[in-house]
Image (cartoon, rainbow over all chains, first blue to last red; front, side, top):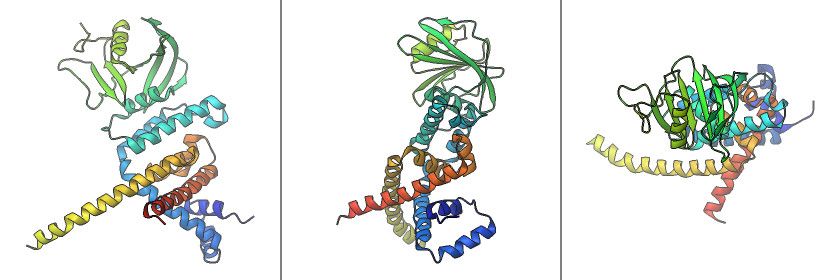
Length: 238
Length: 92
C-alpha cells in the first residue's frame, strides 16, 4: 500500500482504523513529518469547527435528522442522476445553513421537516398517491402527489402552483399534526397559523388533519378555504 | 467580601473571553462558508452537527472514505483560512 498522508490521517482521525492499525499508525506518526503535519492541521481545524458548535444546539441536530429522514431513501441518492443529487445537496446545504444561522425556537420534528421539504422543494415522497379531489384552487393547479413520512408521521402530499410561480403544499395525515411553537391558535378552535423561516403554515383537523404551506399568507388561507378546510377562528374564515 | 472580589474580577475576564470567542466564531463561520460545498457540508455535519462519517455517507449517498476525505480537507482548509485571517488582522 502506498504512503498517502492525507488519506491515512483522515482514516485515523475518523476512527476507521482497528486497534493494531491505529497503534502502528501512531508509531509511524513519530517518525513521519508529513503524517504528523496532516494530523495536527486536521485536529486544529476540527477544534475550530467544534468551537462554533454552540450555535447548533441539540434541537437543530434533531431537526437535521428529521429533515434527512424526510428525504426519499433506498438507492444511493447520488447514483440515480443529477436531479436527486441536486435535491440532496440543496437539502443538506439548507440544513447546514440552518445550523449556522438559525435562532428560531425548536419546532416539533414533523413541522420542521415539512418546512424544510417546502423550502428545498424536496418532497417527502416514498410512493405514489391518488390525486386530490380538488385539482384547481383558484389560479393554483395541482402538480403532483406522493405518499411519504415527515419525521415518522405518514402523510400524503399534494403540490399546487399558479402561473406566477406561487406554490403551496397540502399535507394530509391520519392523525393531527403537532402544533407549531408560537402558532396563532385561537381558543376553542382546532386550527392554527404560524410562520416559520418565511414559510406560512395553516393547520386544521377538519374535515381531515391537513397542513397547508406557502410563502404568502393570503394565498395559503384562500387556498385552505377553497380546499374546504375549516378556517374558523382565523382571519378570512367564516 | 471574597465573593465580591471574585465577582469584580470575574466579570471583565468573562467579557473579554466572550469577545474573543465571538471574534473566533465569526472567523470560523466565514472560513466555513468559503470552503468548497462538499467540504463545508461534511465538516458542518460532522463537527457542528455531531453526525458520524457513516451517517453523513448515508445522507449524501457517498462512500464513507469520500466523506472522511472531505472532512479532512475541509478541516485543514479551515485551519489555514483562520490562520490567514489572524495574520491579516495582526498585520505584517
